Length: 191
Image 1: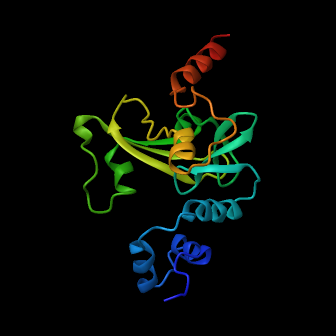
Image 2: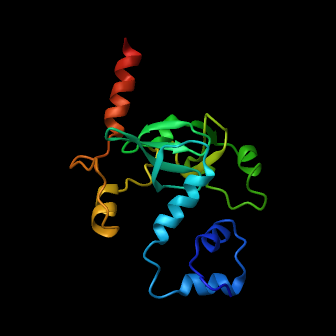
Image 3: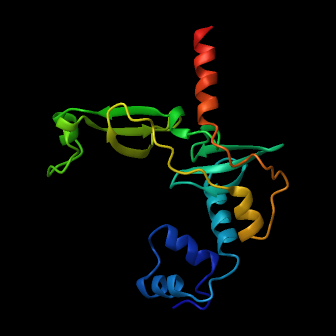
């Protein structure tokens, strides 16, 4: 076991799936947790991306909420593609492939178990238009709205949990903007 189990290097190995089993158990079971683990984690993520915008919060393996300065926060992919305001559903900016037929389902399900096609189910695959990486998959009834998985209250996280308030904290940050985004899209399309 390494001397400092909660070191930045061990966190890097953990993220890469290369931390030895005993060290993994020790790190996961560490009590109390190291107070700077979140900051070390963000630093590792920041080192891995080719852009300089400050990562505020990872929202999946390849997507982050980043600060663009002047109170602007957006969802950004590893490759640098930006999806816009983090309070709007980033999936609306993706390339989407929808599987609805048995043949399409069998391309990804080798042993059955796929959604019930007789019930009108479909699988939606969301791809980044910048790097074509598969970012998310959802299974739902046809016509169901695109699922907004996660709207974090970043200001509360930084202020109340990390005790490090963000300089651009605002009371309206935690409002879903997806409807406003869609309305703006429809207005532009109508003109």
